[in-house]
Amino acid sequence: MRKRRTIYHNDARHYYLWVFDSPIKMEDAWRPIDEVAGTAVDTFSYCVERGDGIFYPSKVGLLFGSDKRPFSSAIAWHAWQSMQSLMDRGLDPLQVLIDRAHDKGMDFFADLRLATYGGMDPAHKVEAGGRGFAEEEVRQRHFAVLRELAEDYPVEGVELDYPAAFGEPPFFFRADEVESGKEIMTEWVAQVADMVRNRPGEPGLVGARVFPSEEMNLAQGLDVRTWLGEGLVDFVLPYHYRYNNLDCDMDIDWVIEKAHQHDVAVYGILQHSIRDESTVHDDRRSLRQIYPSSEMVHAAAANFWNRGVDGLCTWFMKWPLRQQERSILSEIGDPDLVKERDKRYVFIRRSEEAASLGYDAYLPLELGEESYGELFSLPFYIADDIAGASDRIRQVHLRINISNVVTQDRFTVLLNGESLEDETCLRDYGRRDAPRDQWFEFHLERVRPRRGRNVLEIALDGRPDLLVGGVRIEEVEVYVQYGPHPTGLRAELRESIV
Image (cartoon, rainbow, N blue to C red):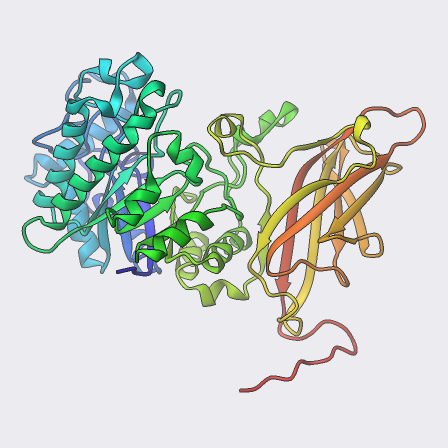
């Protein structure tokens, strides 16, 4: 049965075992749970290993740090010492978190990365020429860890984490075995589902973290559509682990439609940055990770809810979590709370690594001199019913950042086929250290985006004499701001029935 959830994910390392001194205090051992307690978060997801060891005293897998001593890494030493200091007191680090989550009214999901080979023969790795999941040992090892998690610990569910994969694709099967690997993987997922659902005591849930598009999954030997059709999973979380920039327009309609046909829940994932080094280009390499504002998260959350997800999941928010982060976590779990919050829809930028795996973006967009007058389309999706909420919409802005631009350049800009020529357009420096960039800020009064799918079209019509070359569209944002009253001196109120 589908259940609404707000999930917070912790990878056991960055904001937990790597940061606290040993012997770890119980207040710090509980920190991953306590920092999200009291918000809308009702489910805690925990990554139990990353490929070089498991973060609890496993009887079937490689314990993290057991093959590394003495340590050459301070963070690895921190992680091992923190775990060991709990175990020296007779405490199981995983059980400590599970008990705390239950004390705070949260379900607990154990997340297992499946593109890892900790404790196994490294020759099985696909990137090393091995056969990956086609090897019985690989399937058995992962199955044994999942059985331990499902049967020895009181977790509510397990997550089969496929996108958390590194190296060059394909990740689970050799290229010549991907097609035959689909059946192998589906059979293995069925075995996991049978085991988890029929464990002693209460049946457990089986979830799968999968890639956003069906094509990306099939390229890895993951026949998600069949898993859903055969009821092998209880929930799915589509996302791309190697792209961490917030995507307001993640196109996961295919999996929502198929999942809901079979009463399987879909949880949308809100990535934790708005820009990072993977999405900057040229001299923008100085940019480091930028966290999204509340308005940006509201926009992505509203889009997910509007597309029909059963809940949301996020992770790696700016740490330590403070009031802004807790406020976001308190709001995103309820679609009504984000419905009429101010929103800032930010178009994603291309990451070459992610694009190579099939997760591409429209930006940055080159408008070259060879294409003067040619319209380039930028589709986008927004959840706001701007026409229907006209008595509460304060303003709608479209902001476009263009580099290598001069004021004399001539452009055509259309929104859903209508020209923005008569809308007010203000200009400003794009970056204070780079005056060749400009922001074009359109105050949309007559032509406004509609709820659902929209198309922005842009053309460079020409450049001034003696200036050749093109420009580049760097950033696009749509800002929707709400207010308590209609805009204008003679605003007409819509009739309403209470």
